[in-house]
Image 1 (tube, rainbow, N blue to C red):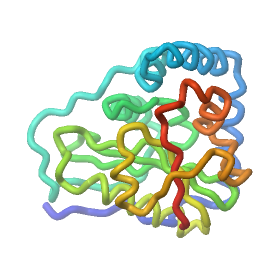
Image 2 (tube, rainbow, N blue to C red):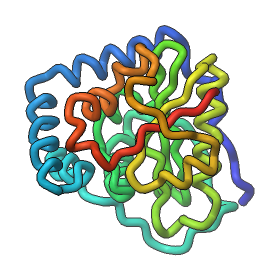
Image 3 (cartoon, helix red, strand yellow):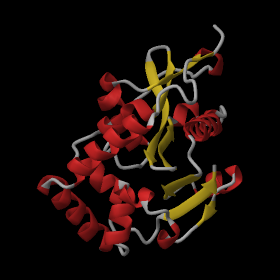
Length: 221
């Protein structure tokens, strides 16, 4: 079957939806439970533990398992739905990324589905005229198919269609990938004020020792 691109950049985000998602995330971030988890992750990370794995463990999420061969022509691209949250969390853990704040932004996610299984994803979080790209993962069985680059391109197009002027992200293991796409390293104090509300920014700025191996990156939209 031919690939069907059901993810249309610009079809979802509006200023109202962006504001509502940011408010939901801010409320979740402020809870004592989330604050305690962030502190625990930071304390353990400062001692050498991997922050993404710690966050996954504390969120009680196991890595995704995908069976069989992946055929690129059978992949369907679509926007995330509320029912995808548990599977997205497992896929994000598989990519060694923290499975946090998915529900608040799920409709900003691009999901790659192959014969009913989720094999790739990535999301946008919108803050004012800035977009933060997050959780770009391709299951190991689908790597080498070009899906990662396509996810990144569609997310960047989605942010531009909304009117974002600045694109930001954090990465641990995919630094070279994002450099090839056109991102460059920037210090945290170069982030625009609106984008600083983002939960990963909050963690990295509050706990710099725990985030010492994390790259902060930017690209013009």
